[in-house]
Image (cartoon, rainbow, N blue to C red; front, side):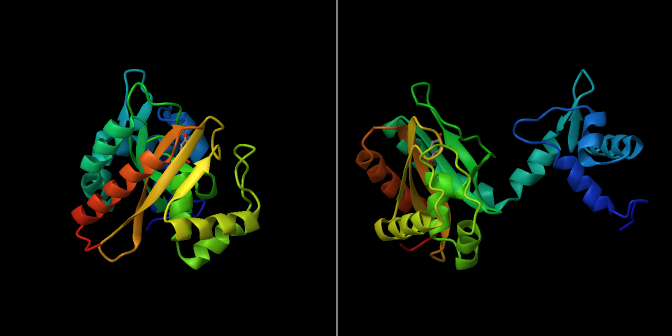
Length: 250
Ligand code: PHB
């Protein structure tokens, strides 16, 4: 791979360009991309231009740049996430129509919970989750489920902190988090009252793949003091159904 005078490869520069896009920053100028990616303006303009020509980035009428549909198409079409999402959608729709609160599907990705899907209706309450957004593992019900069934090394990495306090109720004490994870494994689900926003309680259950590993967490975001039992019943039924759709024998 050809290197620039600063020694970074074409691939590294490309990744830095793409990673300047975040959930909060979806549109930017080529100059801003260059600055944020730490690239000389000429390199930034060339890379952005080539990515626009290939459809991986798009230029709007004000010449600002956004992620292109071709990149979305390639990433979505060939990903493992698509299979999981397709297997989950019918069951998620049923949960959402019965519980009438945000219903979401998350996977473990680079030590965070990454949300593949979120179904909501106008009467659903507050929710900080975004599709293709992330939440900390220790501070959300989905994250707690994913962490409780994750491998030992990842658990210890997260437990060794820092455990960021999102609200006054987020578990930030490693010994308490360890106890919470043991509880999740014992009862088979996670309840996170006020951990990520004071007004909501997240409730999540694991979804296993055909090998029996936990592939995802299925959750609903309830109003803080709503009963969790009816939602949990729906979540467990939906998780079994998704597991069957994924080819499991559970
Ligand atoms: C949770 O999963 O615990 C959760 C997620 C989003 C919220 C509230 C709770 O807005």
